[in-house]
Length: 456
Image 1 (cartoon, rainbow, N blue to C red):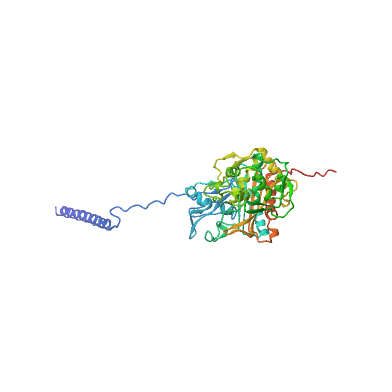
Image 2: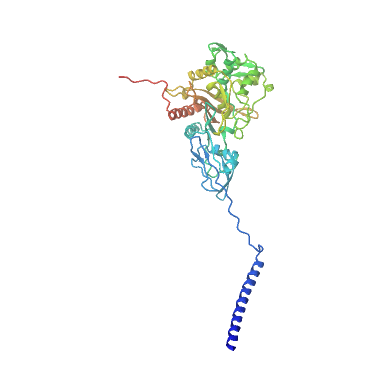
């Protein structure tokens, strides 16, 4: 009996010790939980945000202009190709954030959501434009240069700017670093004599002049209290409209333009969007174009040969593009934008003007065997006090090919640092157009329109 009581007592002690141990463990755990800073139950860690890398910027033919392999990265595989058009993003300690300029800035929200943006740019035409512009800049020693190439339906095939810019490279402040400027879309220039082709089209469309008609053209004439002069002296000649374009006569084109009301020319220029501040919304600058009320006799005469107003190279290219088929095609750079156009000239008028520009094409713009057309321009640079006689802009605007244009191209070389006799558009801008046209015709596989066949 005593042995049984001792065994029970041992079992009671063991059970008590077990219960006591569990009580101590429970108490320790309770104290730890009470001491925890986040309350009784610690909050779980937040999962990482579900974000996508920034979307790509692509050319029409699928070339990648900008890409983010990982979030926070931004790469520009084609370097300087269309650098100012692509733009750039903010950058801090190797990480790339929101878009600040160009397409990166204009379509920042779309790209930030991880969606791609496809442009109308053709990478091959863009490369040809930049190569031709680089050589033209070297020859001209110009402050800056731009080339705009539009397809006949208004698509921007190329927009080249020099000096060139690689968005991946270190950069200065906007306004201080000349590489950052989008000269093709944002800088204003007076278009000069290139506009004579548009004035000629208006005169033909309105029936104010016949192609075969001859008019007396002196080297200078008085308009109100000012003198309108041709760029070189010549005796009074009888010229046709085509010869007035060939000689780039300010006097001749302004004389013919007096046959129509100034409101008529102003209306056509508006239809050509030379005053349009929303031509390429968010990318193109607003032109400086006077209202009709501000066109006195002198201002009207000047406007007929491209003086007294300022537009971007893009505006000039879009207006000249209307001579491709008679319709103004709103330029577009995003592949998903709709094509919009309106008739300005008849096809017959556009064809007549192109034929004149083809027959009288500047020598340095000619490409043996191929039909090209275009108009030169040399515009003085406007200053607050008038025009700087020592500084000019050399221009060329032309069609490739002349008989059935697939593209309209404008070349601008700003402030060439050369002797005065070498600064003309016919000497500096025309060769850039010829080189670009040769490249595009080869790219498109266009056979020569005229060729000598050697038959034995």
